[in-house]
Length: 321
Ligand code: DGY
Image (cartoon, rainbow, N blue to C red; front, side, top):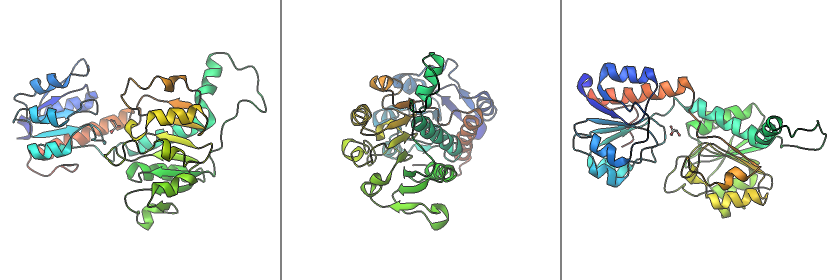
């Protein structure tokens, strides 16, 4: 059935990805890349076999129950699948796949950029040069924070967390991590496992958030957990915005209870809490974790591999249902 399956593609994808889809399936593309309202996707899905969505399409239980019976699989062009109600899909008999592995390095690279940028003031330093407020080199002002040799806590030591740890070792950082389970010795290396987040937080000069957004992790970084960090801690988030309680983080940054944050992901993207834009001690990026041509192509190929397996009646490698 591979060459006949009809795929509704909800966003514009890289050309090489669309070319392969065209070759193997009967796709319908989104030429304008506008974000379709969910009601439009549901209507447009009539007669299609599969949806190829991204994290901008919220496939909740209501949406899934309204999909036509012809839809057998939702392939998401993302590693995260918190925008899809997996239980509802399972109940509806719809397979769901994601795109792990291929964006691990790009996302870990960006976490390091955020860590350095937030600690060393890349945002305010850049602005000083552009806005001509740089008067002269000064021994005392402005100053950032050291990274080398500091303690890095990683919340979520999956593929991306491990890749962040690997990079951080080059900075002689001491790695701590909190995860559902302890890694085996080969993956863990010298990192210290904490079964309780509360045990790890007081040891984090830097905290990198690399866990999935789930019912257990939503708002896990809140006023209570932020208060457990040492003064001058720096938080980095390349996972999902809803892991952080914005009210609590903005208050901790405003009062300098923590030193800085580097954020690539936010609640309610792109309409983020506007107070972040006013803060001097936060380095902001617009969800760029996987944003390189090679990575975006690889994500597309991975999504297509999953569709290909599914329509060839074999189990897709990245089945999450
Ligand atoms: C992912 O793949 O989950 C990225 O965050 C893009 O949504």
